[in-house]
Image (cartoon, rainbow, N blue to C red):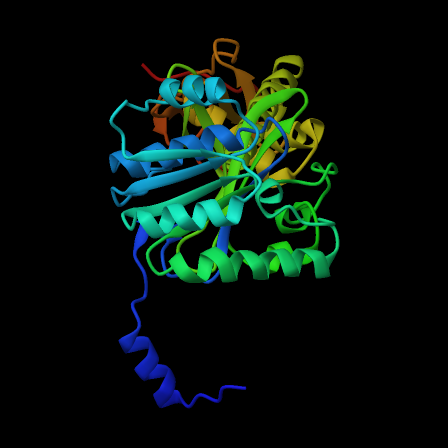
Length: 375
């Protein structure tokens, strides 16, 4: 057992290179663990892996992140040379690109190690696929997986990790659509998840929705939340689109907007069927949350779709009408005539008497002219 003090750790950290980001905040050299690109069959793992390899070769961004222009080694087991030619050149590979493509042999470890020893310029190694390269006795058993990883580390990773970043393609379990973390969907023993660094997950939404969703978990670096991929068929490349969180937020907003439209229509319908009904009674007939309905009526009044008038039995209620269907109100005169006989003296209110004819001096009127407007 090696015992380390805080000072030992500080000295080790300052003396040991921390590694270089081959893909900024995603894939880095000098990592003891390899990284994974996981997904179901036909989810797009190979497409994304080729795009990654060529992005590094050309020094172009990958998934919106800067890359260090470097040489790449790409190990394959599932494709023929003809397939490799068609796929890589369609993805944008040029004849003089700084990439080497290896196909599976009986001595995978030995040949990859030999290549990396001879070519120190290689900074990224892509392995398609992990199980085909490691050739584990039983992928689902932790002891077998652990032994395979230990062999891989001893013969390749430990020797070349200081200058290389390793990414292996791997499969999800058949129960890909199960609920829960993508970490639990990784095919095989649990040690596979434990022995790996950055994990890139890609999956199809469902059988009826062909869109792909990508997410990234990192031990070091920056993760990517579940995000829809935008596929360019001409270049067979992907870019990040809308996140699932953004889509859900838009859906909620649209749902609220739809509910507001329905509420608005319902409020107008109640007034149309009950012209002159009080605002309070209209709110009751609409139903739902009283404050929300009242606010909608305030909005309709402000917009001019509904016209309010003061009236009712108390003379203080707010009566609601559709615009253009409200009754014409009688103008209120500036002053009235005295209520005594044919007296035309001005008084401030209907029913009042002027100073000359104040009651009880003249008694009760026999004929009122309270509605006569003075000339």
